[in-house]
Length: 166
Image 1 (tube, rainbow, N blue to C red):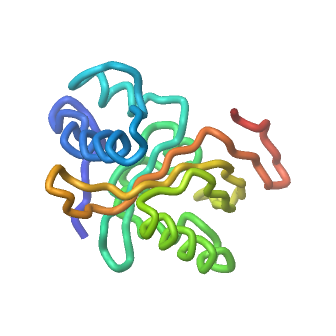
Image 2 (cartoon, rainbow, N blue to C red):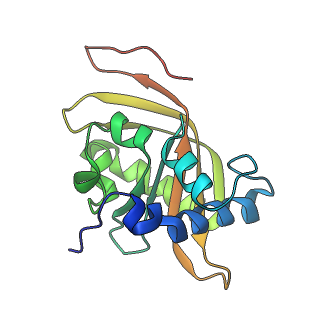
């Protein structure tokens, strides 16, 4: 499995991948995910955003290929553990069938804006994401690259409950 290095100056903070995410979002939802920023500013703004953003590739068993800092902190994983991991491992086995169903629904509709589901961190803490937006990622020729999700609403369900983030 190819390991991707964390975003930094040497890889231009994954500028081309971020462009796919943002352009697909704009094309499908007819509005920007971020305010009016360009180039390196927008990739850094997305990396440091206060909402979680993840994407996975188009493989039959998709693997994460991007996560911003909020998502990395939320899942309690460094870049080199989360990126490359099959995205199905972000939820417990009992919840994977429902996750798969909703991802197919998002794929068919091009995006959904009301995704909810329970996720699990590296240390086993559970949290409920609510009102997540999941969208298909395409290039300018409409070639499918996978899916992305962003959300800013989650509730910790673990015994060591944390406050709700909104």
